[in-house]
Amino acid sequence: MGENGNEKAGASSYSDVNDPRAVISRSKFLTGATVGLGGLLGVAIAVPAIGYVLGPSFVSEKWYWTNFGPADSDQFKEGEYQPVVFERGELGELDRRVAFVRRDGAEEFTIISNTCMHLGCPVQFKATNFACPCHGGQYDTEGIRTAGPPNRPLNRFEYKVENGNLYVGRPFATKEVDGKVVMTDQFKLPGSPTTGLLSWLYPTP
Ligand code: FES
Image (cartoon, rainbow, N blue to C red; front, side, top):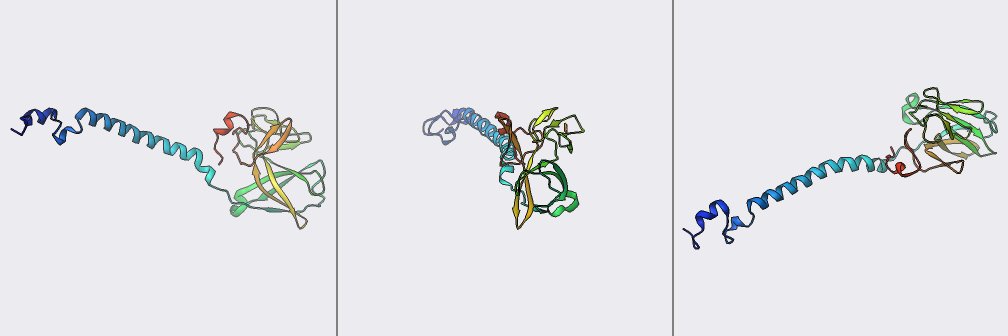
């Protein structure tokens, strides 16, 4: 028998508040354990999801400038698109791309990617529009979608003219603003919207 005579009862209920074992009762322990476990599970689910959404924003793609040759070359005609096949980066022909180059001025160009913004098939330029052979996606001469399933204009490449040569860099997603194509500062995969609330939900790869 202890000082206050509660030893026997305390062995099962810890009703003696002076007994250190009574500091955490069974129910409190179970509540705490449940909350703690729930919290751990929440973190285990949330961290990978947040990492998937935000992670790509912290990974940068290597920056390559590809020399397309003299900017005043006859191959780049004013008002006409010229397809240029080029290899980009260290993968050589495994990273082969096609750009449609149109001269807009002495050192001004419009350079459109041939990747369809529906599922990524290669579009072709046909006289007055870009057409996708896969599901009938159509774009006008600026790359703005006019028909079919694509949800945004064609990507455009950044470019610069240096020492008389035309250099083509990274492709960027575009959006249509008041009937004009505006380049964003992000690359987005086909199918990812660039306007509206949904554009925030698609990660930048
Ligand atoms: S991939 Fe071009 S329309 Fe579907």
